[in-house]
Structure formats: C-alpha cells, structure tokens
Amino acid sequence: MLSLGIETSCDDTSLALVADNELLGQESVGQAGMHALFGGVVPELASREHARCIGPLFDRLLRRTGVSAGDIDVVCPARGPGLAGSLLVGVGFAKAFALGSGARFLGVNHLHAHIFAAGLEGELPLPALALLASGGHSMLYRVDAPDDFTLLGRSLDDAAGEAFDKAGKMLGLPYPAGAAVDALAEEGRASPRLFPRPYCDNENLDFSFSGLKTAMWNHVSAHPECRGSFDATSGEAVLPQGDRRAALADVCASYRLAVVESLCCKVEKAFTGSAAAGVRSLIAAGGVAANTLLRRRMRDIADRRGVRLCVPSLPLCADNGAMLAYLGALLAGAGYSHPPDMEIVPRGRPIPDDMLRAIHKDGR
Ligand code: KG4
Ligand code: ZN
Image (cartoon, rainbow, N blue to C red):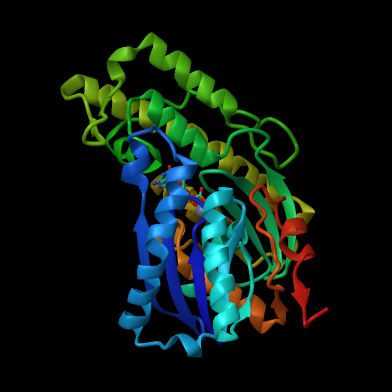
C-alpha cells in the first residue's frame, strides 16, 4: 500500500509517502517564523501559505522519491481538528488528486495520526495507554487497535502545549515557546513549590492548565527582571544575560516541572485503574512529547510498570505528513475510505466519536 499523507491542519505544510510501513520521503515547509511576528498563528496567512506551497512540495516529493503519481494507492489529508481554511487546502488538494488519479481518499484525524506516529519507527504493542499532548489538545486514551479507542481523560481548559506557549509569551519568548522553555529549563534549577500541580488531587483522569498560566502571570508580574524580550523585526528572542538569565532558566525549569508532573500524575493514575488491564505499552505523542523532561518521566513510568515506551523521534512528534500517510495506510488496509464529499471537521470531537463515525468501511 503506497500512501500519500498531507498535513495542513495548522502552520506546517508537510507531504509524505509511506509504503509498507516505511517512510519513502517527506517534504515540509513550516510557517512558525512568519506567525511569530504576530505572537500566534494567523489563520488567513496560514491557509494562503499552504495554498502557495502544497503543489511545489508535491512535485518535489515525487521527484526525490522517484514515485510516479499514478502508483499512489491512497491519499490521506488531515481532516481535523485544525484551522478550517488550512484544512481545506490539504483536503481540497487530496480530493482533486484522488479524482484525477483514481486513488482512494481517506481523511485522517490529526490527533489519531499523532498517536500512531511512533509505529513508523518501531513496534507499537497494543493495547496501550496513550498520552497525546499538543498545542491544542491534551488527552489520555486506551488504545486497543488502530480503530478502537477509549477516551480516558482530557484537558478541561488549555492544552499542555498552550500552557507552554502562553507562559513563554509572558516570559518574552517567541511563539511557539515550548521548545525554548524546555531548552532554558535544561539550564535552570526547578523549585518544586513555585508553581501548583493543578487538578492532580482528584480521582479522574482529566487535566487542567489554566491555573498554571495564572500562576506564571503572577510570578512574572512580581519578578519582571526574569523576562526576555522579543525583537519583532527579526522574530528572534533577546534573552537576558548573567543572573537574569539564570533567573529565567530557573522559572522555566519550575514551570516545566509543574506541567510535566500534572500530565504524569494522570498517567500514573490511569495505570492503577481498569483502563490499564492487559496494557503492553505507553505512548507519548504530539508536539509536547518532544519535551526533554516529559520523555524522561514517561520512561520512568514505563519502566516501573514493565511496559514498552513508544515515543516518536523529535521530528515525528511535531506536525508531519508521515504520520498521516502511515495511519492512513493502516486504516485503508483495514477497509476504510471516505467518499469525495467528505467534509473537514475543524473542531472535531476527540477520537473515537469524530474519527470513525463518518468513515465508510468496505463501502458501507
Ligand atoms: O503537535 P504539534 O506540533 O501541533 C499541534 O497539533 O498543536 O504541537 C505543537 C506544540 C506547541 O505548543 C509547542 O510549543 C509544543 O508543541 N512543543 C513543546 C516542545 N516542542 C514543541 N512543548 C514543550 N517542550 C518541547 N520541547
Ligand atoms: Zn499536531
């Protein structure tokens, strides 16, 4: 099965070809630099940029992989969640391609694809517990099969990535700030009591991060000297030096610890409940799974529980076409496809409701 994945849900245009679980090639263009000037993604600019880049990226992908368009069996764009105008560019391109070439067409849920991304790099033993932490979502699932999910918990307010991005903005770091906060945190010393562990003291598996954001606001208001600044012309962060840089690094380390422990306390809790019955692996996925401390803590949990840790390499944690091509191939192989009038689902409900309801299995 030769599968073309198309990611345009937010600010990355990324196209990839996967054949028999192997990545043949991927071509991507990111827009972070452009949106950093505005402190967040500007939807109108994002969709225009996708429309400008998608055709040339597809040509380059074919050229570099030596694949001819007529050999592609299934085309799998991100169907949602994401920005409507951006999703429409990828889905429109995929529909046109499928109609012209006769390939099958299958819209793939972006979150669902994140969860399976690690499968491109190694075995992903199921059933699994999966933590998905990205810029827009924080979810905990039990995964029994590529098309069999149970949602165990989700963020009641901000996502973990959003918590990093908004805190970073308060600290004067450019959007998206997760990676910069992480890098600074590696230099700093965390004070475990500087920030709270919101929503850990209860029995459910949901998350909440908005209180952490408020705590950061209060801290920065009281200690403005720890802030960096942002040069809007170059889009670059200007970090303080000396003691002030050390103070900034310490705040980042304390904040990162609070976010990561808030995520991990619910993963630990999931392992003590019936949802963990028979579980063979622990998956961490989404952009925040690139976080250095989260990766270390998830490794500790997996080792203690005696399950395999499945975390994608850093490029596969971020938004990418390869994960869509990979999961699309799995689902297409199981008989799933969409009709050409499939609609995007910009604010799709979490898997499995949104994911499989409108999908047609074996033509039904
Ligand atoms: O999955 P993703 O690339 O896009 C969405 O689907 O949202 O996730 C992007 C998010 C951003 O919030 C970004 O700040 C965060 O992932 N992120 C990180 C790190 N690298 C990216 N957060 C914490 N630590 C990192 N190293
Ligand atoms: Zn994503």
